Amino acid sequence: MTLQPTGTQNSPARQALTTIQKLEALSKVNIFKAMGPHELLVLANRAIVQDYAAGEQIYQAGEMAQHIYCLIGGRVALRREDQAQRILPGGTFGTLSRILPSVFLIP
Image 1 (cartoon, rainbow, N blue to C red):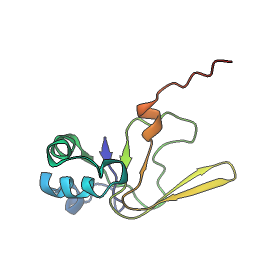
Image 2 (cartoon, rainbow, N blue to C red):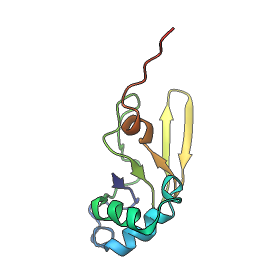
Image 3 (cartoon, rainbow, N blue to C red):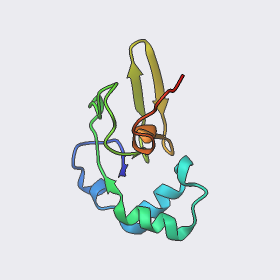
């Protein structure tokens, strides 16, 4: 799992988040809101903070995401062909490709 704030690449201020700050950020993420403090602490200890510059591509449409991305600051635009979706802080993306790596349809 990766926490994904926006900003400049390798920003020292963003890289210095404490476990408590990560725990607080995760508690505001929609898919983790029902988790208790112990479960959030486990996630916080494994979470990696990664900064991306404005306009930087995180992954290509159609590729399997390598992480569950949790946006804790800024915004992300997901674009595919003529569709776009905006992700705001507390939102996630890349989730389904990690939880459901394959979907089989059986007629």
